[in-house]
Length: 254
Image (cartoon, rainbow, N blue to C red; front, side):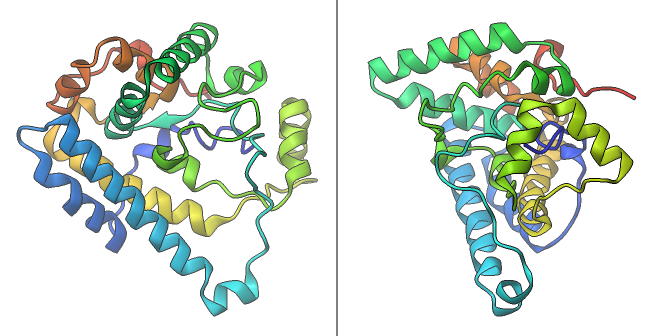
């Protein structure tokens, strides 16, 4: 677990580089009259290009020579018990995925979203991590059930020490104190985080230009649960309506 990283309000910080501009170019044609289906298709391409950027980098000779090996593996899931910030287009894509599933699967997703939202709505980043509540999309086998459309912040988290992640899950306060004292260092790869944050910056750039009131960090479960219950709300958010404050990410504070 990377304490607070997935839920950081800094996820809305904009930066300019090749990938962020490429992502902006992919999404911008969906406006000024955004159709959720078109935005979902564009987000799929955003995911594909961001994944391709990371794959190209991780297979480079220089990176292979110098970078530590990630410990993350299918079925791990220790980082999937914390607050997750998403942009409106990411939330819309997730809700569309839920809506597209066969009835039994869709109903199971809706139940998991409702249950998790009830337990976690309004919690701060720290409170959410301490609650040890699994992501609504984490399967009992520890695998992501929406892997193909998972948010960009999820894609960018790579740990090199599984035991560190388990220890954060089991006793977050103790691990935070060790990090603060400098007796322990976080064990996450910077390169994938930078790549996927760059892609997210491109998404946010488009929202700032075309739907500034909706360019906010949303708590994933609360936002997707709300969109599943009111499918047309996604269209209104994309057009510029501000999501209600109860759906916003709630940082830990000073």
